[in-house]
Amino acid sequence: MKNKYIVAIVAGILCAGILTTGLVWSMLDGEDPKEESGENSQSQQQPTDAQTPDEGKQETPDESEKEPEKQPEKEQNPDEGKQEKPDESEKVPEEKPAEKPVEQPAPKPADGSAGYVGNAVIATMTKEEIETMLNDPFMLLVNRDHRIGKDFNGLNLTSYNGDHRLNDVTASALRQLISAGKSAGYNYVLYSGYRSYSTQYNIYYGKVSRYKNQGYSEEEAIRLTNQYSAPPGASEHQTGLAADVCIPSIVNKYDCLHENYEYTDEYKWFSAHAHEYGFILRYRKGDEAITGYNFEPWHYRYVGVDVATEIYKMDVTFEEYVEALQARLAQLNTAQ
Ligand SMILES: [Zn+2]
Image (cartoon, rainbow, N blue to C red; front, side, top):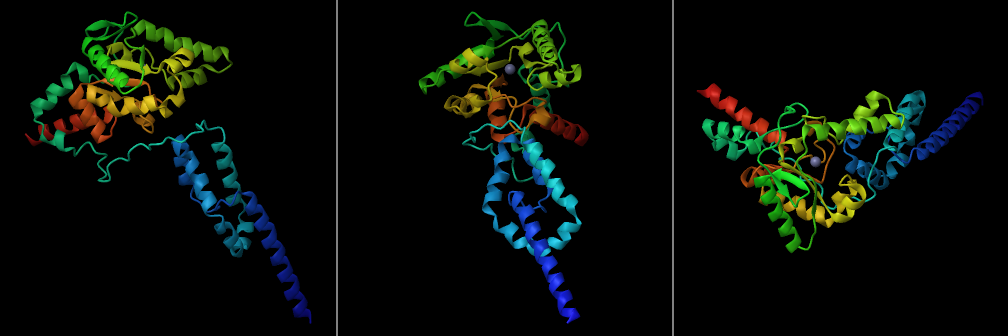
């Protein structure tokens, strides 16, 4: 008799445990608590993918119902459950556009080379050809790590529509690109071309002080400004080879700085054809760690048709392309 009672009590406790834990888990949105945190950190790096984990969750609600057998373990490890919560709350403040991009960025080549070091075209280039290319002014790499001096006043600047200046070759290529867009039914406007060192200085530190006036610390103000703005000397606009291009409705209201521009048909057309006229999308989505800037759907850089087409096909950043040339040059120098 005694044994029966004990069995009954133990069974009762187990049932209560199962019910309670089941309840807690259902409050966790059916998310599998064993999900590896790596997935979460990935989705944080790429805001566009932020919706994917949710989709996955909806597809696998059964998982949480199956799990109760393992509950007693779970109750002994309440920390596992807790870890889920902070992840969820970290996701919330993320800025994510309501719409999903229709076209996902093309994945990098599967051969693991990231498509550049072993690139067929670069592999056939001679040492001299690579050196000439790296010294070409249109190949000038400017970023936070490769700055230009305050006396660098652009390359062969010319007026563009009276209110802007651009490098002369860049200006003519941009006119052709914008005119081709018009034939396709889209209207584009140049928002910003050449900017001098001092203009960039004023833009950059102007933004820093605006953030500080909003109550941010100096450090935080600089961090926020750095997301989209280059410090003086680190902006491609100082070369005259960069153009911020978007559409009149956005320029009039928001300058060009508007995330939703990437969802317009105009952006899709422009980003698909820019290379045919020698331009590359300079700050790509997902490459923030390489370029040092947030995705800027409006910022294009002239590099010439051949290089732009090659970079477009290779699906890499300008930094990676230049690095590939340098790597191949080093290889050839060693071989000699
Ligand atoms: Zn720009």
